[in-house]
Every structure is written in structure tokens, then in C-alpha cells.
Length: 402
Image 1 (cartoon, rainbow, N blue to C red):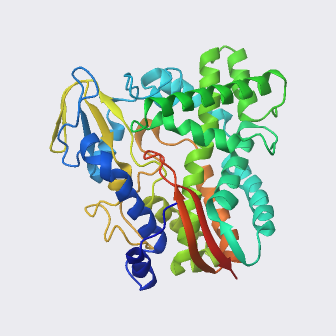
Image 2: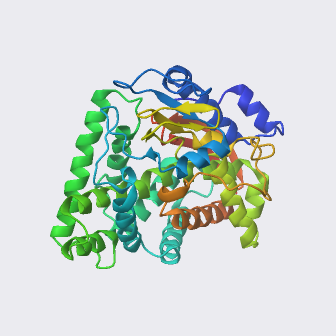
Image 3: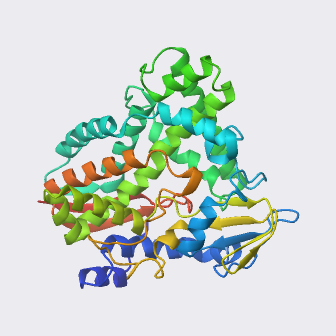
């Protein structure tokens, strides 16, 4: 268990520029990266330790260079080495025509964001109503995780099944996407992924998914010849994991920010929907659910001041880009009326997040309901997850009250 340092707590309580939530996340991020960051991806763009023959890893941190990196066709999504588990039938790790084809099919399988928002709002109303009026609430396990899990069921078209451990399994799967994990941890994550895959396959086989849900629509695309069996299975697991992990981390931070940031809380309690949406964007900018990505260079080129060579691994740190002072004035501050550059938390270019509109609507509904019930907050404890790519806590307990 990790608690917020007295310095960070005092700064947030004393009217510092950063809210408690931002101070908390930033402090832990510094701890996480302290051991592996300089070795794994130096900030100055110089080569890190080689991953394999003729491979070096270079990091990109500025907003302009990160945005360019996410749009460059020379930076390929399939890394293709032993340090990361990448399925060559998964949309996330494909480029070009095959990516465009799969993206169009998966986009059809996603629900309209309005219907997703309506479903999520109903669930959030019931969830928050059942929370105590005053007392200890885990903003991760009692709030963010159930909302994210419910949306995963909705997107897949499955009935919610209490006790099936879906959230726990999807959380365990995340280790295979973080290069800092040990081979043993990755092996466990891969095995859990196989379990999830089999459960989704059986649900489709036995007709336990809704006809207009993601799983059924992907199966229809496979039966029509648009998808191979491998593409259908990989897309099903990708939908499940992408719907859950990033959303849980986003909602965890958003909840903590709303409870410790008076400007955000007041805006969410008001009726100005445009201002509320701007607040959601600022929450996304401050704490991107995905901290960095990994690409492979297919040719030699220069990115900013960094010379990239063919087969180099290039890592755009979107979280750092979202805090780049060259793109955002006072980047560590929460501003309800921030203008200028657009954050990169949902990516950019061909791989921009397909579920961005759903995530925005889900976050807006969650914050509106939370601040309507609670206005006081005292931090009790925080326990952090080990994943540096999909960064967030596994528990955040606070004393909440009206």
C-alpha cells in the first residue's frame, strides 16, 4: 500500500497549482519510472539498451514530435520481437490496408455512443445510489471498476454475470502489453488471456450474446467472409480489454480529481453541458489512461532532434506530450476553459481510439452522479497497479460525505 506523501498532501490542501489527484498520480509515476525509465527510454532521445540484434529504443516526449510519430507510416505498430506479446490478427498491431479493413468492421460492431451513454447512466445511477451516504468508499473498486466492467459487457453484448471475475481477468491480461514485466508475469497474463478468449468463444457458440452486441456482430462478419476466425477472436478480446482497462484507469483519476478539485466539482454539479465536456477533456489531458506506446521504424528518418534508424523502437510518451509547456500553458494546472492544442490521450492518426466518444460520455455521466452525492473527501489509502503503460491504482479509499 502506498500513501500520498505529506508534501503532496500539503501542497494540494494549501492551494497549490496541482490538485490532490494530479499530485498523487505524478508522485507515484515518478516512483514507477525511477528504476527503469533512464535505462528503458532516456528522455533525451538517445538509445536505450538494445532489445535485440540491431534494435535500440528511443523515446519521444514533446507534443509536436509525439503527434507526428503517431501519424508517421514509417513507424509500424507491430513491434515483432520477444519483448512484447503482439497478436498479428489484432487491430492494435496492424497497419495499412488490413488495419483499415479491420477498423471499419470493429467500428460497426461498437454501439452508438448515445446508446452506450444511456446504458451506462442507468448503471451509474444504481451503483452510486447503493454507495453509503457517508463513509469509506474505494473509488477504484467500488466506482471505476464496476462502471468499466458494465460497459465492457454492454459493448460485447453479454449479460452481466456477477462472480465471473471478468474485471480481475482483464486486469491480469494487461501485463503482456508492458515491456517492464518479467517473462513469468507475461506468461501468466497470456494464459489468462486464453481463458478470456475461450469464454468469449463459448458465449458466441452457445448464443449467449445479444444479436446487436459486439461479439455477435463480429461473428456475423466472420460468417460473411469479412473476418477470418483468428481476426474474429483477436478482435473480440481486444474489444473486451480496451473497453475495460483504460476506462477503469480514466474513471479512477477522474473521480479523485472531481473530489479534490473545486472548479471541476462545481462545473459538474452545474447545468452547462459544454463546460462539463471541456472539463472531461482537461481530465483526459492531465492523466492519459495510456502513458506511452511502442512503434518500430521501417526506415531511417529524423524525428525532431532525434535520428531514428531502421528497426529502432520508438516510444511516444503521450502523457508527457499532454504536459508539454510548448503546447499547453501551465500544463500541470487544471483549467476549465483551456484552449489550444488537442490532447493525445486517445492517440492520433490511423490508430486513434475508436471508443473515444463512449469513454467521454461514460466519464461525464460518472462525474455528474458522483459530485451530486459527495462533496467532502479525505484520503485514506492508495494501492497502485504495477503496469506502467496502462497506469493507475488498484484501490483508492477515501472518506466521502455530502
